[in-house]
Image (cartoon, rainbow, N blue to C red; front, side, top):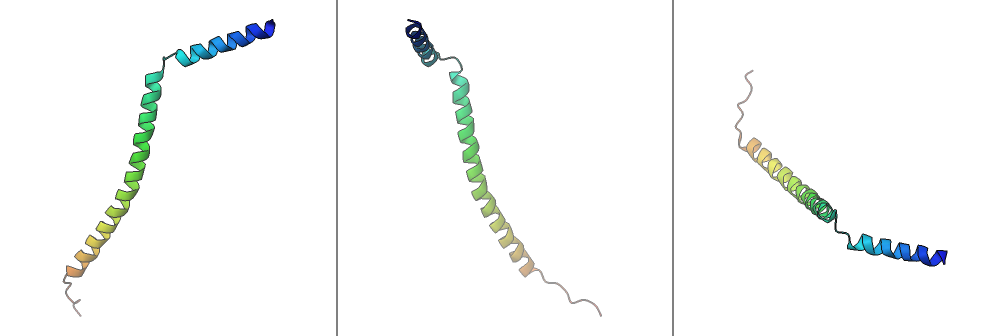
Amino acid sequence: MVFASTQMSLLERLRSFVGDERGQDLIEYALLGAFVGLAGLTVFSVVKTQMGTKYNQWNVGTQNIADMPDPAP
C-alpha cells in the first residue's frame, strides 16, 4: 500500500512537472542566445581569417608601390 501511494505521488509529480509551463520563456531565450553565440563565434573565425588575409595583401601591395629614395652618403 505504501509503495502504491508513493508511486502515485511520483506519477502526479511527473505530470505536474511536464504540464507546468513556468520558465518556458527563459529556457527558449537561453537556447536562442546560445545559438546566436555559437553562430557568432563561427562567423567571427571565418571573418577574422579573411580580414587578416586582406590586410596582409594590402600591406604588401602598399610597400611594393612605395618609392624609397637611396640614403644620402
